[in-house]
Length: 181
Image (cartoon, rainbow, N blue to C red; front, side):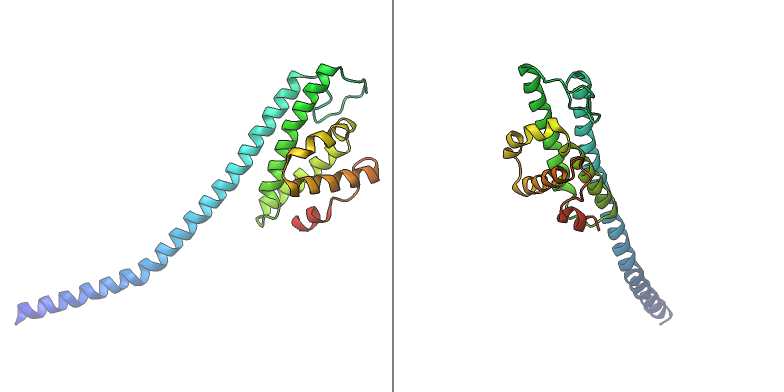
């Protein structure tokens, strides 16, 4: 009988331990799963940022290779007309730039996280700067035809607002303001 009671008590202790493991283990597992999902989302956001940043750096390197063209972030002071070959290079470099701008627009527009909202606001400012540049404005009708329609509508609004202000100081289109809070 003593042995049977010992087995019975041991069985009760094991059942109690199993219940404790379930009661404590389930919330712990949920917490660990949540933390892992947060880390994965953060890694995706940084991956998005890094991929776009890499493309932008490549664009800047191409600008360094062609300092005679008016395609870097800092407009040339002399407004000389490019040769036909230079104009072709400008078109290619601006196509690469617009592709980067489109990617930023599509990746950051309508995002809810603060980092993406800040990134989107920065990219919109950068787009506005380019929309006010004469070299960009002269090439936009040709360049813009090949990109996402929502991006084209957005850029056309930016072009109109920078044209109206003369220097790109006009407010961004409504969806840029509402997306950024």
